[in-house]
Length: 369
Ligand code: PMP
Image (cartoon, rainbow, N blue to C red; front, side, top):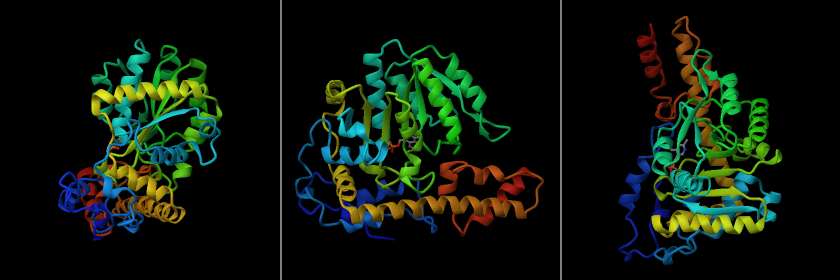
């Protein structure tokens, strides 16, 4: 296993920075494992070890909105490197406490500025959304997503829910790699969803916790978002570096809201900061520096992109191996959905390795006989 030396601040006498030991244990709680079942430390992160600008001042506060450089780089990943919305300064964006914190900040924002609105959450979904929007006192509704018989998207029911929701509702959408089903709408389905959401004046809020993990390419994984942008929606996005940079315990992410113009974006950002102030004042600094250093350096960024592909391929490869092993065992059941979906369950596939996939297939075979 790599030594996570980049996590150790240059100033060892600083008592405010967590020790190597503390960080190590945060990281093994993460979801991704390599083919030896070990947590992965990206070499893009290790390469900037010792060169991280600002590590000597890691006890300084960031501005309330977080690291400007990190936020700039993060917006490029979601909205596109040459996005006109970035150039026109139409995006209100703040650093957030990873994806969870971005969702929570948005939920509070929704409550404050659209107090009568509700949030539509897919079924099934990441369970924490219900806690997040409950604690923000936003009424929740659900929309159909997964069709158990076809083991795919329940598109007709989803569209029905979008059409029948009160105009101006908020819809929580997974930008890619839907958790926990792994089922994403096709490009054509996304177009229809986008069209109908526009017709109804709903607000699409994208949670993008796994950018790069669906296809191995963060750019491709942003395609649903780009489509909504083309269609002229105002959107919100929660981004996280927990998974795709392995920065689980650093709590580094971003909340952005696309506004009508620069003036509105300034006002919205100011309101987001006012919401953050009584919750945590300033976001944490170290992870933000790691991200901005990697994404701001073309060489490190391309190394990171390669590593995202390796992580995605590991999951995709295990899916194929599991399906092949199950098919070899000959039960008259279809296992096609295992490879059709990104992963049938993130926790399950993250723990599957070349060494244990045969054992797992046998066990599944036994219980489904
Ligand atoms: N969204 C989804 C769909 C998730 O699965 C997760 C974590 N499992 C998150 C957001 C939040 O992750 P984090 O706060 O660690 O970025």
